[in-house]
Length: 273
Image (cartoon, rainbow, N blue to C red; front, side):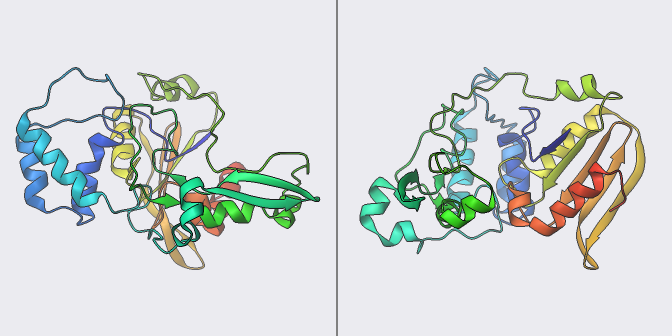
């Protein structure tokens, strides 16, 4: 089983790990994180995870933190956003965001790109904003080209492709997925990889729940390479292999295609990388 940048435990993933991540990425000043921690502030992504009320001081610090990070790409703190994208350049498309492609003589329509709230349609507590950055519009247009669909052996009668489904019904669970690792241990090989510039499900948060598994280390933290360049780091535990991918975020296979493909292939065949 392989999981990439997956939210696993709500007490460490997403909001709980973001303040420290933002601090160590030099997005917020050290004083802001110090004050946040000194006031024992806690915010969680999963609604209702904790009934604990936050103080007005915490709310003010949290609001300041979110304002300082609001113009960043939440899914990759190092990746640029594209204000001059095809969507922003055309007011009509910006309003309806409907793209079109001709496939086998038939017009296919699709929603171009996605906003951060659309990427998590199951998180119904998130409120969409008119100022949300639209990501992936170039990619969506590319994937709907007729020649690309043919390369992926997508039947011509299938509808246009959207990066995040607007028709599937999603849900989230209070226990997240932490419990499954103990169940699967010794029955399946397990890999968890983490793009280390993800601001949504941070490497820092993933390392915290992995530590709490309290599984013994079988291979100490070491770098792995692509073309003699450090691509990330790997640490093997009794029951779980943990791999980081350097310099990319939440969609590591999309943004580091060659290294992640090589890493996953090597892992599947139980080869070193």
